[in-house]
Length: 255
Image (cartoon, rainbow, N blue to C red; front, side, top):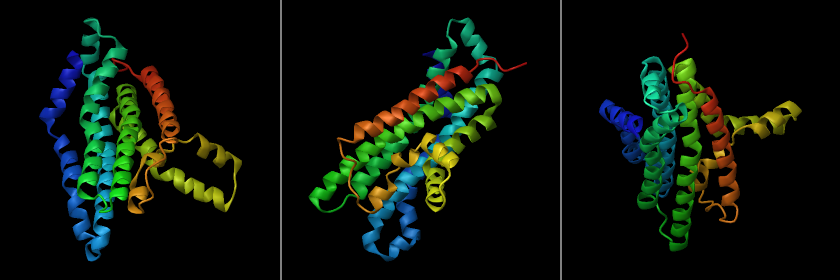
């Protein structure tokens, strides 16, 4: 676990994770105060919940993928990957250890968003509160399952093609899955196109892992009978990206 500890320590000393911590722990309480929600007391808690999860996703995309891409690029271009390989640490193990170290910082973003939403924005009614708790628990799990393979992909792409490419690739995939898929569906409603329909079907539907709409309108938690199916869908994407990441990852930069 030498590379894991090295990556963990390096990220801690860089202190850029403090920006993400500020966005997730502080901004959800600030944004509702400076928005139109401040004029309507009943809208404050839904606005806080939406802000908490929005900040978690934003931090994971902007900081998490950037940190992953930077780590992947540094490993291959600094000679560190080659060094660890000579000590018996395989490429697969190196990818896994860097991935795990970055996930230690990124996974708590979703957990923090869930805890803030549960303790600071829960409805007053007991039945709604239990639904609120289940909803946030479900989406904290989905957040980690969605973000984790994209971190591995950012590391792998950056190790081969550079940090900028690694960051933009994963950030683009995530933003497309969260928002672009919805716009494509709107286009299909206006005019059906078999090619676009196929692309939409094959796209990663990350919007299903974003709880903001459910929390804002109190739509309730996902039925527990349906949750395993949704979780299995994202686990399938996880395994696909894990295999792709290992195929792309390299410990030595091209000459």
